[in-house]
Image (cartoon, rainbow, N blue to C red; front, top):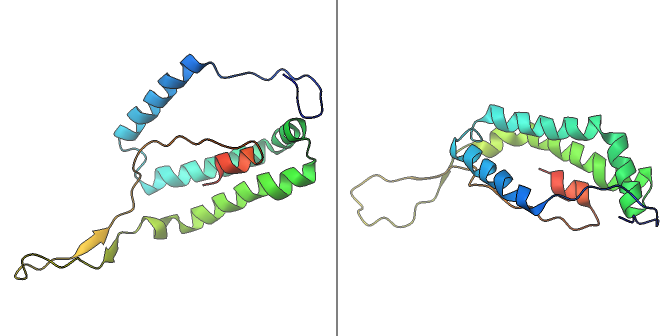
Length: 142
């Protein structure tokens, strides 16, 4: 495979037949409801932050090889953004998870006390397709 600067790299492609089992595993994990609790979600956000920090040099190098951009670009537009958003999400997660009371549409039976709530919960598995120009930021930003 040729990189942006014309050199040859040994990049590995993901075999298509390996994708379906990963999707099935993601659906099975979601069905267990393990993604619902605060502790699980905060752990995932910390994992994103740690992933970027522990692999900063390798990610910066990959950006240089693939996009032809230097370390300043990697830091300014890709890596620091992911870390700061992961931290911001960690500090706001509890508030975002709170059940909120919302206006109730006109009830059919006025004799019954009714109230409505909005409970933000994970809805399922999502496919993330990322354009080539900001691959790390658009893949990992929470």
